[in-house]
Length: 374
Ligand code: HEM
Image 1: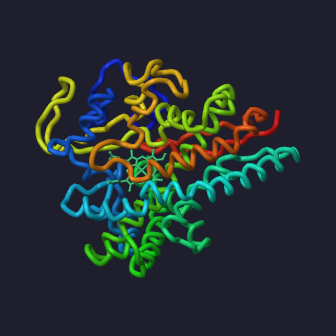
Image 2 (image 1 turned 90 degrees about the horizontal axis):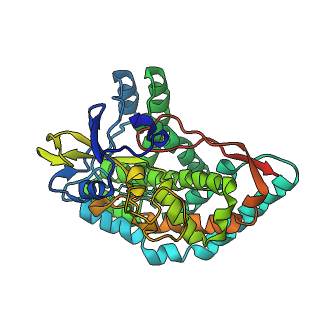
Image 3 (image 1 turned 45 degrees about the vertical axis):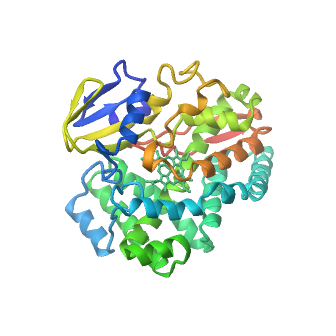
């Protein structure tokens, strides 16, 4: 169940134990867990869900793969300064300045999709729209200009999400490790030559930390938004009436009901309780972000997608507290611009192949969304 949370309705109870984890589904308790650093640490955020076997660990080690605490998994003293430095990279003003360029990119992308559809082609919106735009925006903000290398980022990031959060068997683990390892080694090279924020992390905390920061940012900074776009575009093709609302409002309801990260982990630092369920020090606590967004009382109609309804922004799709997502402004802007530019096209489309998600603890990773003209 935990590896396919999106298939399950919200549970009747706010907290329960399953597969050795404490699962938190209520909005109030989810926020409490995410924000309370005295009782819950983010140190387990990047731990592999299925323990990585010795053979695959050897493959990773041969590429000097390491993920020391830097951002999402860091509750040491270095978290605040590292976060602050990258906060400058993703500062609201820098993100807002991307709007004209992003609009142009999304407009050209939409025109290309329209052309192919008019020619009678069935088009995979995941490949044609969702996967390209977030990576291009991230590359621009982070000054990554090597397009061959950025294409590698895409292949590698899905492998990383499957290796660490999916359910790969031993053979698949080895294949994934053979993709993730060399990419990590490539990032080590980038980190060693970095200036800017990563260069500062390199100087203050060393090469492993700078590589780990790049690793996380290059995955979190684009794959999440790509997945969100595909989930949202699918919903909009199926329910074109939603497009009568403003794009920004549609995006917010999408984040609330279709978060690409369905759950996120913390680890209990001491014995405590949540909603009457005892929690022991060392327990993994799975915060079910998707269930929290649809909880009673969060929005006026919590289970329905009603753009602009009261409470629409109260979701936890970006987490909460000291680790709250640094890229929320960027992903909102990207999604808003894409929805705006594709809005005239989507009501004329019909779904040929709906996206499906493989088992994964946290990431939806939807497969292609293929559409054609009605
Ligand atoms: C729809 C897209 C996205 C979603 C749903 C999302 C969601 C999340 C979540 C749930 C967390 C964990 C928060 C917590 O532990 O409380 C997180 C952390 C983070 N996200 Fe995102 N994210 C998205 C896009 C992005 C983008 C575009 C970037 C960068 C440009 C980014 C950068 C980060 C960073 C750096 C952290 C760690 C922050 C810290 O530990 O201080 N994310 N994100």
